[in-house]
Length: 565
Image (cartoon, rainbow, N blue to C red; front, side, top):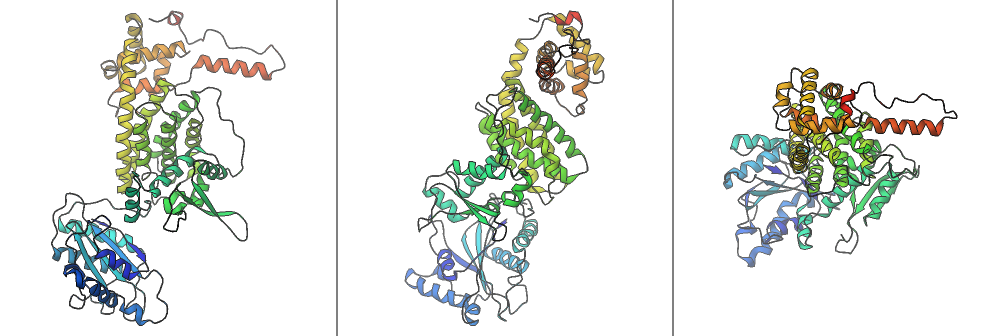
């Protein structure tokens, strides 16, 4: 059961909507199911059309009576509105049951406490089988305003109790960190314009994607403008600094042909200017290089940082964990942006789904997650996508999303846990789409039997407790190819197996060979590193008698340096 509290200042306009046909003729058998006084509340919903306007005027006069009794100007935002809807699949509720729902929510929110004869006047209008609209004017008979602090949260809590008692589907409780949902008017406008999402939703996604890629506040606003988005900043009168900003989507105007503005915090709580500055601490406009020395580095660095984030989620520092979840949300946008192929759509869907999981009532320590955030930003400027490393990164994101769902679930963050699970499903689909042909290709290029047998001995020596599961895993043949590539890159297979196994426990892994395959793929090429180190030394050293690494690493057996089929 979903309540959606809002306020306004036009009593008559809301009544006209409640007893009208709806924006798409969706209002059927509209009628009052409950009111502050059923005998004194005329019901325009079930009368001939000829008397509808007259009754609507009478209802307006009755509901707004206390406001008029104050004399002079009406209080601002004195009209309280709350649609309440059951979940798809819920049973039919009778008018009597809906009346009880209305009274309980109005009591819980402080609009009309039970037994309070001076409470606000209100009505509950039923539009269809699955929902009602609550409307009240927030002026009591004694002239005071009701205490409606956190009324939305209190309405949500009461709906959870009603769901249990009425045998309805239990929805997940929120914590006031969710972004605002588009209004009915915004959705109707998007439909009229043939858009699949509202302007609010589109702007929010664009803002998140840009914030994930840029390094400072100035770049954030500049890039948004380059996308055709109108940007309006609010300047502090004393300091001259930016204290807020608003965005307007291209072509989104109101009846006066003016842009429809959305403040950053109205798009999402962590898109306010202050929350953005916590994630973008570098306020200086700098000319950062848009390239890296090795295009595989960003993928490898991000994979390493995501593995580290899983360790943070297992620790006791909730602020650091929340900071890593926010950084992971940024990383998903950059991974999707840097990915090519048909699974890119799944990655974008995962980034959008994880937005609800990236914040909770726990204040995030963004500084703790600097390594993950900065590593992921490099992906935004990477020209091409390395196949195996990209899949290794996807594999890491799947497991971090599942860990995020578990972390939120343990802390009672129901909505965030559900969002992380949804992101996990999208990431899993993307990984399977990319990994299945890649693993099959590795298996097709497996080394010859004598080499594979030697790797089997390495596995038994390095990981005796897991050897049988690794060697019987369907992806063991693919792992032998990856071990051969790693050996060619300068790694000792036995030592490498020990190193990657120590990164995280293996007992809970379902397919050990698959896990080890992608962990090894993410390891740096030691020969490339050595060459890069020699190049750096030769460029910076004034002498030529610097000791150089041996061409044959001491930990590489001679027979292992042969060419593999």
